[in-house]
Amino acid sequence: MGIEAPYTPQSPAFEIRRVQTRQELAAAMALRYEVFCKEQGVPRHEERDGRDHDALHLIAVHDGHLLGTCRLVFVGATVQFSRLAVAKSARRSGIASELLRATDAETRAGGANRIVLHAQTYARSLYDKAGYVVTGREFVEAGIRHVAMERLL
Ligand SMILES: CC(C)(COP(=O)(O)OP(=O)(O)OC[C@H]1O[C@@H](n2cnc3c(N)ncnc32)[C@H](O)[C@@H]1OP(=O)(O)O)[C@@H](O)C(=O)NCCC(=O)NCCS
Image (cartoon, rainbow, N blue to C red):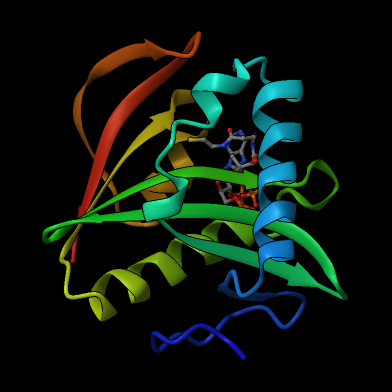
């Protein structure tokens, strides 16, 4: 078990790894629906954009419960990172930060050296702390303010 890229989690409270079963992928989708559609009001057709089949999905798991997820799509030497969601009850305990660290490891392991994403502006410090820099102006996507950021490895 564990993700294939070299990565040592800093917190023993949860495990970060690739989705391994159809059931885990369904649980990740359910968490995304809960967070993006129900909590943030993103239309379901925008949340499910048809790219999940081409993606590497990471999850944070504790005691059989899926607490967080994110998605990586490799396009040449670039990883497009998106769909980062952490269960409400598990927030501010470092799960998203660990998913970003695991994303670095997966990016390197996949032969890529750049990660790009659209950060919701309210959470920008999450990405600042993880080494991302802003690359463009703010814009509205799915009714939410975002800014483009990237990280070069
Ligand atoms: C944004 C989100 C992924 C953060 O997950 P998390 O596991 O709570 O994040 P972490 O515990 O790793 O937080 C690390 C840092 O990010 C920043 N951060 C996290 N949540 C934040 C918030 N709600 N407001 C402002 N800054 C925030 C803080 O700097 C935090 O450090 P601190 O806790 O020492 O202050 C989570 O709140 C979430 O799922 N939100 C709804 C979906 C969403 O907005 N996804 C992100 C799309 S860009």
